[in-house]
Length: 290
Image 1 (tube, rainbow, N blue to C red):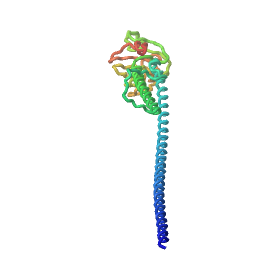
Image 2 (cartoon, rainbow, N blue to C red):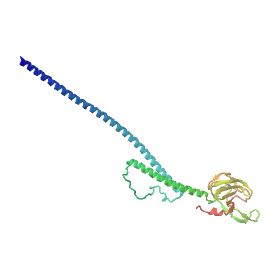
Image 3 (cartoon, rainbow, N blue to C red):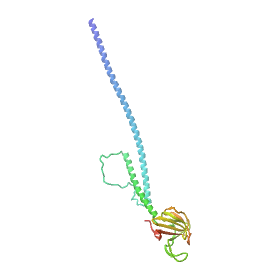
């Protein structure tokens, strides 16, 4: 009886210990499983966050690429306009095309100066920088060319050269002559240029109109001050197209050929005065620019 009791107690103790060990092992398994599930969830959230960040970076890169593409197109269009303007200015200025050749990059040079640890910019950005630098050089060329052209135009406008009539002929020279009304020897202060009545007569240089009206002996007269002491007069007009204070350009119409005043027929009496003294206009009529 005592042996049976001891046996049953041993069996019960063994079962109890086995149950405890199994429970402990189950607890450890569920703990490890929980850790694995938690780590997997963290990895999934991290992967999702990284994917979102990559998406934002890609969108930003695409926006920058579009902006840079537009910028490059603007620079290229600007360069084409500059080249076209440069070629047109070369033609207007009558310069040697080789001096300002807009079909190739401007010549540059100098010794190579290596930079330590030079930063290599991405190809697209480097192309933008190259275009911007190229356009900057073109703009410098055009500024020089524009200055040359402006100076040349100003000089051409200021020079007393050319003829006040498009079609005409010298009917009386400068200097001593027989007066056409009295026959006596007299001084002729200008030259007479015969032309068709009603045709235009023009200013031989840029200036300001200082007189436009009738004056004794001259008939209808236009006087233009060109600066530097030079004044020109255009007399015997039929009609005047300018008034006092007008700024006139070289070749601008001043009036119509007539025979007003002391005149025997349609012509322009043309005078040139330097510092108040008459000079022979023939020198300016026959002089070429420059």
